[in-house]
Amino acid sequence: MAAPQLTTDRAWRRFAGTLFLSMVALFVAYLGLAALVDPYDTGRSTLLSQGAVRPQGPRTASAVRGRDPAYSGAVIGNSHIQLIEPAALSRLTGIPFVQLSVPATGPSEQFALLGWYLQHHARPEAIVLSADAFWCADDSSFPSEHGFPYWLLGDWPAYLRGLLRFTAAQETVNRVGWLLNRRHKTAAADGWWDYEHNYLSQGFGIDPAKKAALERPVGPEPEPHHGGPFPIAERLRAELARIPAQTPVVIVFPPVYARAEPAPGSPRGAAEAACRAQVRTVLAAHKLSAVVDWRDGRPEAANPDLFFDQTHYRLPLARSLTTEIAAAIVRLRTHMTE
Image (cartoon, rainbow, N blue to C red):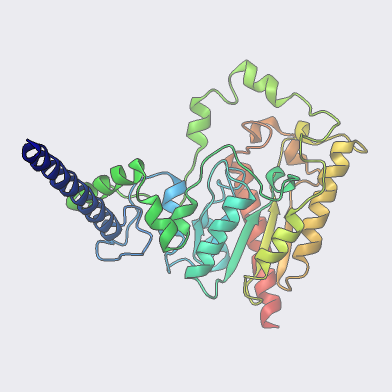
């Protein structure tokens, strides 16, 4: 009487074993295919690399742009420096620049991008970093509310784990379709993205509520978790040590609207000034370095027509800032040859 039961048990075990092995085979096959396709073109597999950037957001596009050997200069930050046009910097300095700024990022993400860029450019000709309020957080981990694909810029184990995401599987399929389409669209290789029309379409500069928000002065107290201490000093020191001594480094304190400047003598003003002072001190240890400071009370900062909101400036101001950044780089390169 037990024989039929035994036969059934064996059949179920064989079925379960076959199912398990099939799932493992599918898992391995997918992972192998995804690694081969390299959906974000990180360069880990170059078999299908087209030498072009597939249209996508800057968070993931930075992986292919950051490894492009055509660009020996890089601009790294967030939307507070994203309107710096890399082609304009290239014209003014003679250095081919790539724009690696990613919106809604802070030092943690930006230094990860710097590391990725340095990994693929042993002797960069210039590095431009944007030091905004996010640099002045009191938490050494510099947490962000927005996700960031660190795995794209990490080691192989991290990369393979990242490929197991559903979005990565989708992008694997999307990349295959893009590769097969002879008329596929491409994004700017140098990362240039003029987001002015995005802001204008949202009513900035026109909507009365947004215009009122622009004119609202900041309070006297520091922003939460921005009153000190400032761990950016030690983190910046460590990051600068990775950059060759012969590489000019420019740190930009990007413009903010006049109403976003704290009152002189206020706790907030003192905290922000102390943070910037620490950044200056650490940067000075890198021989070829300069600060471009647009937090120095310039008259342009009081012109509402040059700002969308209190921390996002418009193209005319961005062009002036670009010229000043380029001049700083040229000076540093001149000193290098003297």
